[in-house]
Image (cartoon, rainbow, N blue to C red; front, side, top):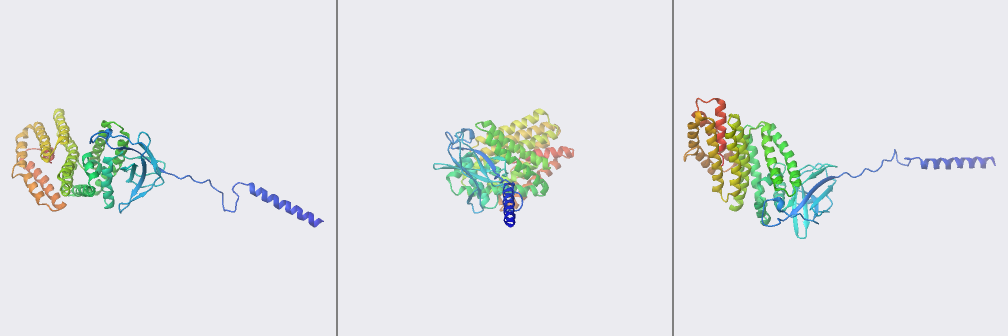
Length: 446
């Protein structure tokens, strides 16, 4: 009897202990406490699909119709050119807007694809994806689709990251985009030409005549990466404002001018670099039609026009030119862009730069009246039938590789400076610096 009671009491204690343990939080067969599950973190991409122009073929994004009900997803472009989907598919709202979520983090140059019925549009995200952060892509349109196809070619060739999506955006107009979208082989050819521009830009900057260091070029590249992200966001936010769209690109180009200057590479050096790099791009587009080549030349010339104008303005300021003289140069640069917009052939592009050249030479002569006659003589010698510029053209015609192109231009720059120094024996070194650089830049592209 005593044994039975002891057994019952032991059983009651054991059962009670088990009941107590079962209600204590966190007690289980696993070691340690049980933490609540962690929610998946995602990176977000916002954009809009604008599709085809409302009417006609116009470069203005504001003329595009937003697309409701387009299926949109994000993908990474693999080395073989294929796409790897990295997000779920979402549908655009009535304003053509969408926001994608992806678990991917730390990647940039992600492609965004939108589809509706038989139409497809693409764009590229320049920003690096980050969890719990929203980045933006330029609107998906027929123009951005062509740009994305060109950029996909650069990725496939292993050249993305060096050439940026913004480089492609700058050099491809809506007219060029229409050609790319209608010709299957053109994207690869233009990708090659744009890569040639990048290669020449780096090589020319590193040449002893320019003297940019690796540290300076890294600073420019870092500033450029940041500017590209801002460009995408600005284009997304531009909505239907043509002025905001233009301002977004103008701000990007101004940021790049400042990036070179801040790194210690002068604006006039940037102008010289661009002259070499865009010349190499046009030379490398020989396999495209003359019409497409002209379109590339026009867009490249407009990019150069902004830099040349800023370079001349800065040098005129350094030479203590009057506000009237500086204003005349700025207005000439504005007119240059207008004339380039309306140019229908190569000769009209050259004529536009000729007009800019004439104004700049006139204003630098007015600023240095004591050297006005010498400046006119220097400019005439540069442009004579057997002058320095003729020698440059002969050297470029004979050039069979990039090194020969760069060598031809650097010899041209050095010859122009030597001519100024020899012609202005009584001028100070500061005066020679201003006059030489103004004359050199004024004689680019004309």
